[in-house]
Structure formats: structure tokens, C-alpha cells
Length: 121
Length: 109
Image (cartoon, each protein chain N blue to C red):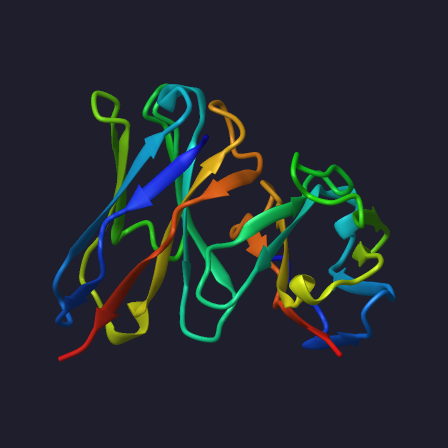
């Protein structure tokens, strides 16, 4: 069965960077894109970006594109999200989600368990 | 950019029907997906491309989308349906193309 297992919770100081991993199993990793979505406490979701392991192509949310980098390692079926210059309002649960298509954004059909990132001095 | 507006809460008795709306300008021209999120858990896709149901999702869940409103309908509501529900759409003509709704808390009385 499809599984996305994310790395553990992180606590960071303002200005630092965080890198969250998402290890996929149960399907052919290069056959589907991966979106990253975050959810601040008590809020709705915010899409951060999308990457396809098939070609390495990426799409980023305009407001975050200067601070976020998405990568994949096809040898380990793992996707990564790095967020730089962290601010307290980056405190959120970060999710990876498998996209139904490898070629363009479609629908996020399976989600990881989430990674809590807390930014505090 | 699109804003998808949902009612803050919907209350429904067991066995009855819950309808959750997702309003946005011309949302009917886009594909809408719906997610269920229970406390402390990751979202689960319950409806995709307006009215398709993933395998494993009961046929009590259905969707529609027309004009300025998409709707998630849950028939014969059960206690286990109590959760937050979010609509989501992709609009590649927008500066902020991947949009989630504001979310609706469904309470089973």
C-alpha cells in the first residue's frame, strides 16, 4: 500500500533553515509528483510547491519561492523540502502528499503523517 | 486569486444528510477536490475531480460543482464522519494557483 513517512518534529530558531524528508513506498516513486503543504495551528492549508521525480521539474507558491527548495532522491524514493530564513509564522505542520500525476499538478491522493516545525527564539 | 469560502460549521443528526458548500467565483469551471481531516491526523481524499470517489470511500460521500459553488454531500451521516472538511482547486491562471477552502467542521449531534 502507498505510504509516505516523514521525518520527525523540529524546533528551530528564527533565521535558521529546516529540511523535512518524505520517504515513499508502495508505488513507483518516479510515476507521481509530490506536493508539499503546510497547516499553521487552527488554520487551513497552504500549498508550498510541487516536484516530479520523473523529470525534476518544480513549481513553487509565489510567496515562498525565494525561501523553499524541493528535491528528490530517486535512489531512496525520498522527497525533501528545505525552508530557509525561518520566521515564527512558519510554525506549522508540514505535509508531503503524492500527486496522482507525474507530469503536472492534479490531485493529492495520499498524504504523509505530517512534521511539526516550531520556530521560536 | 481565488478564495474558496466554506461555512465554519455544519451540525447534523446521525442518519441525516450533511451538505458542505465551497464558494468561489466561477469555481464550476475548475476541478474541485475534497479532503477529510480528523483531529491530529493527516488529510484523507474523499472526493476528486468534483464527483469521483477514491476506492475505500463509502458511496455516502458525493460531490457536485456548478457555477460559483461546489458541494460535498454526506448521506446517512455516521459518528465517524465527524471531522473538518476542506475543498481545494487548482487554477493555473492565478498567481496563487493551488487554493484550499477555509474549512468546515462537521459535528454529528
